[in-house]
Image (cartoon, rainbow, N blue to C red; front, top):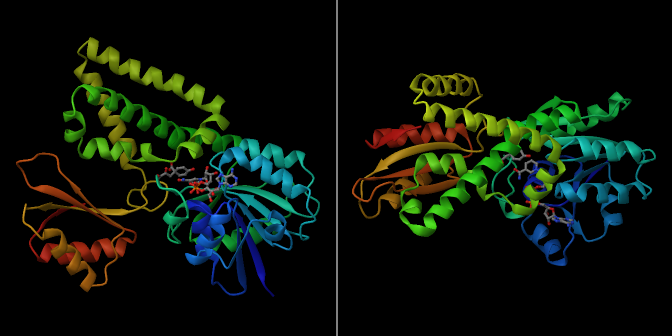
Length: 364
Ligand SMILES: NC(=O)c1ccc[n+]([C@@H]2O[C@H](COP(=O)([O-])OP(=O)(O)OC[C@H]3O[C@@H](n4cnc5c(N)ncnc54)[C@H](O)[C@@H]3O)[C@@H](O)[C@H]2O)c1
Ligand SMILES: O=C(O)C(=O)C[C@]1(C(=O)O)C=C[C@@H](O)C=C1
């Protein structure tokens, strides 16, 4: 018996889910594209088994339907699905970064013999589109599910069973609570990163040295400022009430720093850093997903021609997969720092051992 999975929106998240399911025993993955050019792209990249522009062709006789479109489009797709004669027992889920509004929409709709279970994988990237999709994205990450009251246990379990292919850890959360927590740990950081980059961008108008000197700390805190504008417009507007409250609280945090600087309150500043350090050290560091999507290693590199080639050749010869490589130059007169990113912790550890033996200076 074949299990048909339909994915609407084969981008970063939809494409990554498709890659987790495709090729597994008895599973067929069908991708829905809203643009004709995407149909060929999904197939030629090998992300789905079939692709179609037709909502009906994708959804009818599907056992599972994943809605992976921007948050602002979720209601429209779910409403359209509610008008179709879906397969008995079909499970519709979504991956939207907010959960309260889609849960409310689902509760109002009549889905016949289908079920809706909200979902949100707590893993992602600043990149978007099917080009960024990878089956490793969700490994060890949390995956939130928001089953509605009265949902049959078997329906919940069959979704959980399917999601085992993602190797994510499932966690059940109430939709409104989800939006408050994720507002604080994901949506607020995106606003702060964008505001910070734009503040420095404005200073840089007068002096380009701002951009040239921007080094590790700035890069670390602002990676997510490169995230997709449409995806984030929809998330923030959808979680507007929560975000307005959080920005009020944020203003208070910043006012505390203003006061401590005005009063030259060194003790207060130290306490703020110590409190943050304590809390942050409790975070599940070096896990994929919620905190980091890659495992990074830093090497001090002398300014020798061919050094990048030498390092990548050694890694290649030892079949160690790199996901990214970046030279971080903070000063012109000192050696640079090379950041090597790996998707697997084991690759990072093997690379560290090899490069240690080559006498490079390495830090994690
Ligand atoms: N990016 C992340 O880190 C992340 C993490 C978890 C959940 N999410 C959620 O996943 C969903 C998809 O985000 P993504 O990062 O994969 O974005 P993406 O841009 O990579 O993919 C979005 C997909 O939706 C399609 N799409 C865009 N506009 C559409 C429209 N008007 N009608 C139909 N299809 C349309 C695109 O063609 C693309 O296939 C969003 O709801 C987002 O909130 C994102
Ligand atoms: O790692 C990133 O780039 C992310 O932005 C991932 C991230 C997050 O903020 O943690 C972004 C949005 C999601 O809904 C879930 C995860």
